[in-house]
Length: 112
Length: 465
Image (cartoon, rainbow over all chains, first blue to last red; front, side):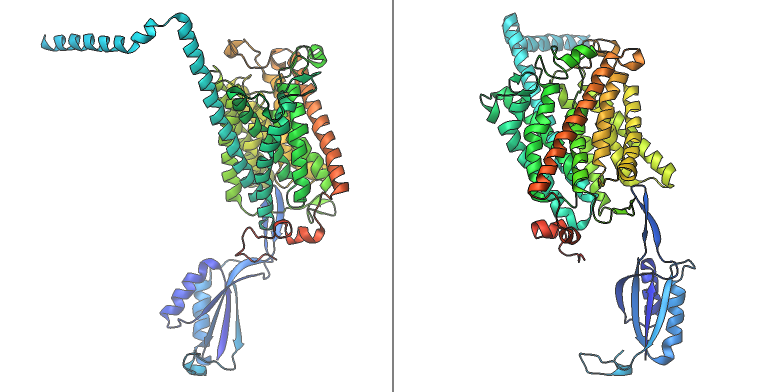
């Protein structure tokens, strides 16, 4: 099993959700996050003075998938989250040791 | 024929009905008629001043929203409390002391010394008091915005008492008391004799705004800038938390100015109240347009909060001249007010190195002084051109018409507002700092004044670091 952590734009969340849902991946966890990549931040203005917002708001989508589904899901996220502009975000993949569905006690592949 | 007969019958019946209705009036003597008219006119003034006083009172909602919107979430409850208690303490103090100092029997033209606690008040005096009271509290609330986010609540309240009891009404006495020796306007005053014209401040560019603005300047100098405002001497942006509030507040203030300037005719039958109101709104619009254009050119994008300040800059500027100038002059006064405000904000931060989160010193102090001077520049002179039969306008024409006396009288007011308000406020703030401490501790400032001064969060469902 692998966990995919995709940090994406707020306004692409719906596209990603719909695309994953259509491909049969309904489960996910979504968190509001702040961060920065190479872009570093954004210069804003207040009463004629510039200031830098160096941590930008993004959303983090977490999905756990079986190993053989990984490439397909990565591709769906990459396609649906992309605007081809700076600030589209990043995707990280992390190995998952085990999983359990609390209600039934099912584990691993059956639990996700 | 039938139609014509019907019409004549109509005319006869209507005439008879009309005669029945106005019969009693025809029967009255001329004296009785004059008395009835005077009584209606008095009532009209009462209603006008109560209505306008209500609009000026509503400006406290405007100030609360502007000041809360342009500062940070962690100080919201504190700034709202300061605004609320400014008007509430203002009401009590102006009743007990302020009115008597401003409008009581004059002691050598310097200050009033009777009518404390509204002794001997009647319907007319209560009416006048209510209208003047909301003005006094307006002057006081200017200070809260400039000193926001770091000033001790207790010290601020004590300053408010002193401003409403002493600083505001003494200067007000010099301008509006009508006393023979009133320093800036009385016929026997040495300043009026030297200038050759009485100082004119229609609704208080000087009395209310400059006094509040320069008291605020003294306050920000004594209290010092907020933590993080200056890094190595360079001013930093500290964004306010809610422009929606700031804009609603600005529009409320603009509406309130209808009462502020319109009501300052002090007469519900004044023939020029509509000139006053039109000039007021022309200047407000011009001030906003100018501020928007300057920030647009300077920063590449039109700045919302400075444009909002531009509305107020135009309004403060036109407060003194609104009943003495033509429409085109009101627009010029507003445009220049917008320039002075933006320049003033940057002058304060870049040169004086003082921190005024809401721009109150530039808006009220500097634009107030400009408002006073603009009377001396653009006044058409009472009785001239559009002001034929006017009863409340600047005496003499201004510089553009080739006269200097009004300008000199106005300049005297500018000097006195600064010397008096800045001087006394500086001493008072220094004393408060020495005795009580004017500023909250560094830890409390970082924590936010909502928690440290009042034990609450204005927005308890947000996590605030």
